[in-house]
Amino acid sequence: MLRFGDHHRPVRTEVILPRQVGGYNVYKSDLHTPSVYSDGTVTPQFRIKEAWLEGMDVIAVTEHIEYRPFDKQFGEYLQADLTKDRDLNTSVRHAQKEGAYWDIFIIPGTEITRSGRYVGHFNALFTVDNNKIYDEDPVQAIRNAKNQGALVMHNHPGWTRTGIDFTETEKIAYEEGLIDGVEVMNGREFYPGIIDRGHERGLYISSNTDIHFATANDYRLTGTMRNMTIVLAKDMTLDSVKDALVNDRSIAFGFNTLCGSEELLKAFFLASVRLTPVPGQN
Image (cartoon, rainbow, N blue to C red; front, side, top):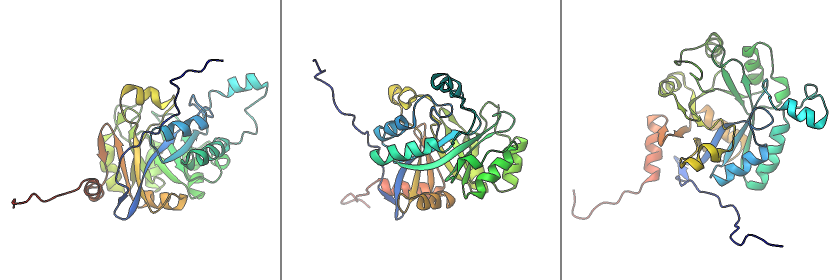
């Protein structure tokens, strides 16, 4: 038997940030990750391992409720009809089990997905039962998620469009106060105008990968750092992370750019540097 002599164990790449800002712990998060259970191409277990390798602390599992293109392939392999009696919490459970091994904290969630151009996409985070969210009316599906205590994030505003104007569905969701947060960065897209929307409406802002392939394809192998939402929370629990988002203690990072409230960015900067007086200088 031969073994490759230069083989080595995987090593986590640490993203160096201040440990605390304003008395809160700093956590590196990705709040938008599908897997092969919807339209991603890797398993939830792989999602968690790559998150550990790339220095993440928190991952939200957000499979599409309505869109699962791999069901047919799974059905052919298993010789089963996968369109019936599907448990939409399965991916969350697998991720939680794997997360416990790699010390990655899991936020249960799902994505409410309709036409990106004419309706919009929304992540429901901190869900209790993903099986009870779907409704033919996308706004009602959002209401169903909110009734579970979920926070709803408006995903990639402007995706497949030429601007960031509201669709009719988005107008209703915003007018009813159903939206809690918004992505200012999603994958390789950046929506600067959404920063103002977040501030004006009191929404938390985030930057996420929405990764469908391996993150190495889009980030590590291209020499770029993956998008992340920096969350300032008391501790790594669902209640604390949720409280951080509700109270706008998040910073979006991507494209070598930090986005957030002026007050929060100032505190983050001051926690990141050390100032030393120069002797003899005023």
